[in-house]
Length: 272
Image 1 (spheres, rainbow, N blue to C red):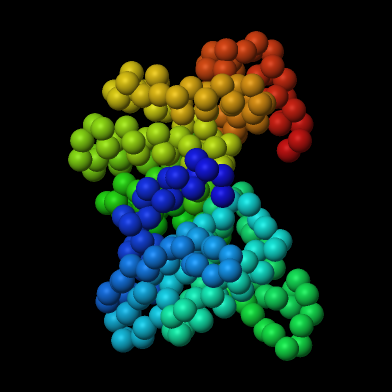
Image 2: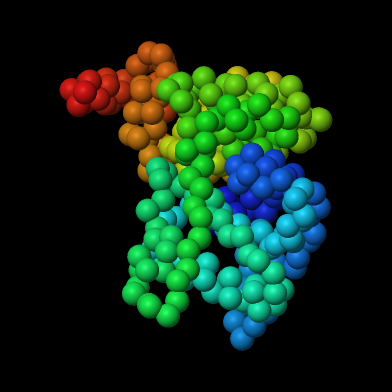
């Protein structure tokens, strides 16, 4: 996972772990015990999330979750390696999940037999595509760290600009103070890049009272520069498809010639 996305997950994991495993994984914990992340063997591995769980039925197991942005073909071997180390160290059942946060649905092999034929060993793990989750399922939460993940979920036919507005409105209502609100908004902007919605998100953030303080932030400036220089055409397409804004307004946002916006709109119309 890229460093900026990985940083957000590590910062927020303690706040979202309970609703994550309850709502998305169907695990209902009675107690959760911390387990050191680093697995010391002849090689060192550091799982994204590792907890000892006792569920409401009394089952005891190790919960291991990896958060993935890239659809890695060799992921099944990494998960197998994790599981063998965990089994040897804890001698408890291991429940493993990969939460795929990238674009579309993960195509990575989930069974060892899909990658290599080995009659002496069978292994599989579960993949949860965050894009399969209805956005309102996370938007209904009162936990800001969970709410911002709604930007990666399925919008269920709604326009992206509407979902972004709902997320920002909810964050404004429940954030304890302005400093925390700024933090969540910045995280939302970073996560929105996974869906090529960074420019649209930033444009909505500009309408918020806190924007004057945030717009000087390094992350925002880099996000804007990258969007304009490397993803301008794609972001203009997203605005055309997901908003009712005029060509003039879109051209103003991107500081570009209106003819470029008109050309992209015409190409989108012809492709339908």
